[in-house]
Length: 269
Picture 1 (cartoon, helix red, strand yellow):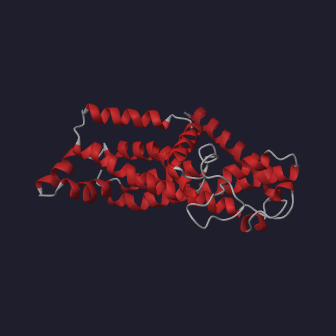
Picture 2: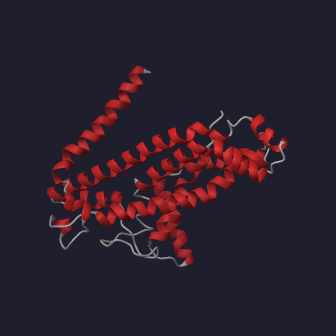
Picture 3: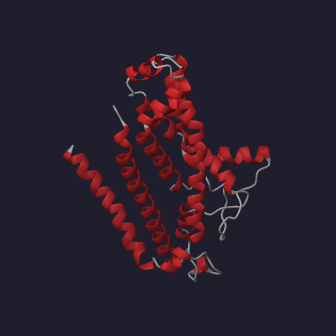
């Protein structure tokens, strides 16, 4: 266990230090607070504000859409079906299989769906594709914790005259709220760092999207495009964008821990 922990810590520190070493010198307030200007990808002025805002829009929208699908699904599996139900087992197996599908496959599926319904590359298309990708992550994370809620607690709620709907939201959701919050932020962090699923769906633009039907940039794609440039200064800006993305994910992790501690006091289990 000590060896495993040491390896993980060394790998994490190596990745973070390598990114900071290459990108910190190119990181500036102008880069964070401005959009790309003419010749930005040739080493001229501008920043990645469009990609920062676009990533937050895409991830927040995808997380909300996934939660609207995942929470009712998980409550149905745990309150309306028996624990040994074959249908529930098949649903969980399907979610596990979806979890292992590469993100580029989701991108190709989202692009195919866009072609069928006539949807252009846009913020909405990126949100929908990301929501499908993180759905199994959020759903399985919530499902595992809801399965640990004591059966006696649920039966006591029924004995007091509560309906399944009231038991679901006033007992089960309240007991598992820390895990639900963590699952949401886990999905958010996975969505904000993905590039393959949005490269065909959300498109890319140097502007901040003003509508869900407009294309949207993202930090992973911004890093990808800048690393492909032959100019060293632009490549260093890609590492600076990676520093920004790392800081955002770090903030998400800290918020997750704080919310977990805040809502854990409501737990009986």
